[in-house]
Image (cartoon, rainbow, N blue to C red; front, top):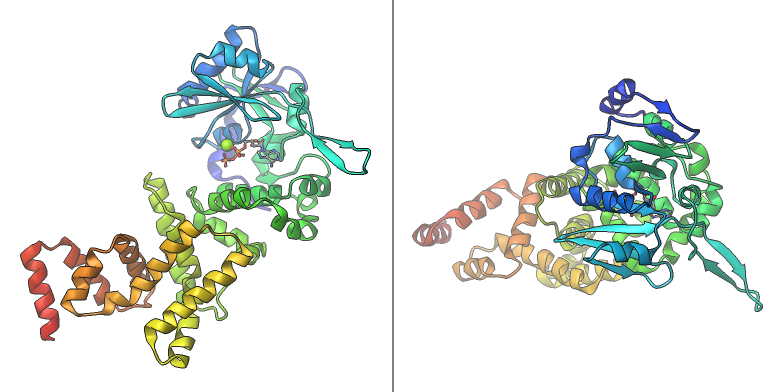
Length: 420
Ligand code: ATP
Ligand code: MG
């Protein structure tokens, strides 16, 4: 079992906890500057109009950890109509259970009414309809959330923390505990397995044994999750700043191979290549730079392509034909495992197909490659291959200098190449 990081331990040592009731805690240690001013404003407006309102879920968990949440959800006892009425720039969304999006320029605060747990309503024909369209109390709202650490409510105006499931205690010990009967909760929504491992990766936590034990049995249900929801969840493992840790957790838990092809032969070079790719991804995300899923999938699957390429270039006696066949086969197998949209596979194929062209020394082809719309991604990918010693470092250095060179220097560099 992992323990909470030192920052959290000292945080907990210092905080003053005065229980007002069984579940309410006076909690003044949260760093208010980490909270979106728009979330605070939304809560203030609701409270000023006589309603209860709290931050909830991952935002409270992250604040207790001392990190800036990536989004803020607000819950209240006001109904969607009442919320909508209070905020001029807001819109109601959702068909069955309505939520309200309060809009502040580019930031959207999602406000929802306390909700009761999903009810299963048996039908005359023997089928069951899942009905989760009911308002509830704050306590019921907490019950339907996934983990104890995700079921805390916090009011930034009066510093009240509401914690029905001992989430604070679990957070302190680095434990992820599913609320209710673990098997039932995973069956109800298997995506919770992925959510659990994602929090493990993000915050270095671990699942308690009761929350872990049914997972093996439930894992096959992951494939029944609608494609777009699954895709979004898997992407969050890799494009939210903890890709390297996510990869480790997914591999250790035998989940990675549920979604991605793995190379037949493993090696130090492959591990270095993937971990460099993931580290670069984390760095870019933490610098607020964009990251394209195509690039991510390209490096996660590159060695499968490479290994088949080695085989097919001999069989077909043609390197490029071998590469194309390897690419088609990998994509075909991969999309059976996990749906990657065509708009991403098109870019992945281009990144891979451009790789041999970095080794081509014909002047015309060098300039054509430079002008290719996918040059930048392919170049970054080629550098990754150099970093993990798959490709001679001098190739990466030559291209880096070439990009930086002016027109005249470029032509000298190309001339120099052809002279060799
Ligand atoms: P992050 O935003 O950092 O990815 P999060 O926990 O905030 O993590 P969200 O998708 O923003 O994730 O969800 C907000 C909250 O909604 C969660 O903290 C949890 O309380 C609840 N929640 C989300 N998905 C589920 C689910 N599948 N089952 C139960 N509760 C959920
Ligand atoms: Mg969130």
